[in-house]
Length: 152
Image (cartoon, helix red, strand yellow):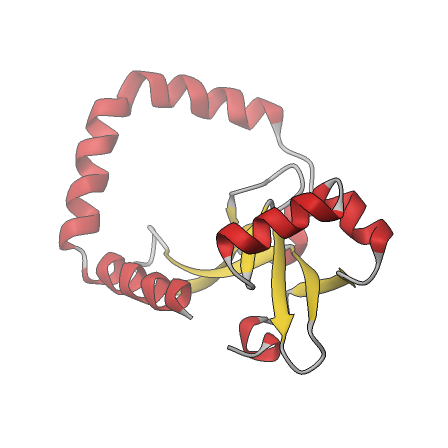
């Protein structure tokens, strides 16, 4: 797989293995980087950093993955829409409709209300969510689209 095929437009170039300061910042030293290459192969992802290998120039390049595209079902309309999963920032691992929302601060009051409601109704919510994910056609479509995105 070529480096250009492995990347998407949401990733930013950090540097390559010929730059000692970049390797030291990401892996500690060149020996740790060599260990990762030996154990995980030439192309791998670790801690939000994607490593690609270009056999023509014999160089490993490092890219920062800031967000991933995912598909989600809108609970109000039932439609499947594209969203983003934040890889960094205060909303890490959260699904947001716009990439710019990843850097917005969290609403602490809303989080506390949600936490209290979830504590009261978690069993009922879990049962309902499980049935929806199994039965609802939009949920099944979102699941299959996300599987396809992960394979690429």
